Length: 339
Image 1 (cartoon, helix red, strand yellow):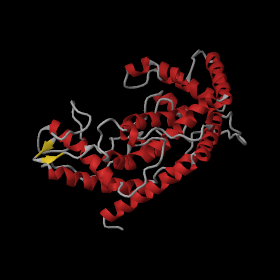
Image 2 (cartoon, rainbow, N blue to C red):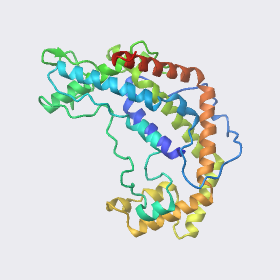
Image 3 (tube, rainbow, N blue to C red):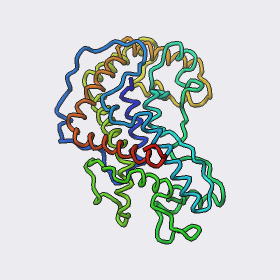
Image 4 (tube, rainbow, N blue to C red):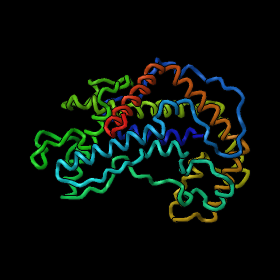
């Protein structure tokens, strides 16, 4: 199960980076604020589980993402070679999708009492944090700044290449080799209508941005809806009431704190690479209180219900997301000789 806080963190990480692609966040018909959702029986789990949420079915499966990333790695490596650089043709998992699938190890994540007693809010060794960013790697063969420009189309001075940006006598593609790879994989794939258009692109941006957005936009569109659902969860009176109960429980335990983040993200915890006894004690009380107020069950029920509302309001766009993923997988298979 992915808590609303952790889902929202995933959205912020990706949508902020992809905003330049020209796609705005998912927009439905304005019904999202129509009031609290109805939920059925609320479960009472005693441990965090990997229960899938409704919007998860619109994200690429692990197999689909692996195929796309393998093909992307080959395309990026081939492109870099044109400019005289050696770049490893090794697929790199999308860090946000990896976090969603693993459940993450963020400070706000629920953990067992034994883990809280041992690690506090610090990550468990080998917990999966610090995934490399998609498209990262060690290129060799020349000046680092030039390599960065060829790889991403960006430098410290520029947001995108201009007509003057040439390397080895060749024009750097929009978005660099990563952008070129994304565009090629998105060839023929529908760019989901997320409420944006070509008019949303920065002035002077090449039309190729629309093609690139067809590769970058779909996952971000789904994550934007996840974030919207998560925001509605935190405003729901049932969630607010549960958090109020958690505050009372924590105060009774000797930790008068105003929010989950105040407990988990206390600046003092970052002063040490390992958890102090005070941090461990706080984390144990936190997890006990979350269980007492059924944090996991209420969060799961509400997040699932609000995500279902997002699907009902954005069905057509989400189906185009599914079609986009299928088209990119088909392109990847053809490139890898599997089609």
